[in-house]
Length: 224
Image (cartoon, rainbow, N blue to C red):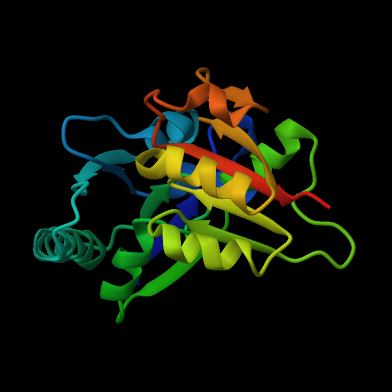
């Protein structure tokens, strides 16, 4: 029976992909690389040196319309099932880890009657902490990882944890920076961790009013 692999290819550096991921990428018949409209696939660029089989680029729209997303997910799940029914082993690649804010999660929900194996990847925030040489948490400290959607929710989380990783910060960057000051947190900004365009800033104010890349995060630590 054909098998679907969900593979996390890590944050950006080719060398940060796991050995298990490399072995699977070299043996599967088809690799599916997610894209958004008009853009390439970051996951593919990371995994490209290790891919031996065919590559299928599969579009996942960047939209907040649940109906549009549902339609596209169902269409893509159907295509994956067709490949599996042909007896082909398929790998669906995603940046970071496949079980954290990943497109793969939605595919997984639609593949119920097939054999599936998920291969973890290094997360962007683990890599970012290593770049900074700053621990995300130590001793008995608490930490949370959140998607930066609702400022009210962010405020609640900042009130509950010693350390907070804020993902998807580009749309609310200035609000987040102001909130971190209000809650007495020191923030560290990492943009496109592991990529050629990587930037690190210890001064969050420096990027207020500037366009922040979608692949950016803040590691915030409570000032004690």
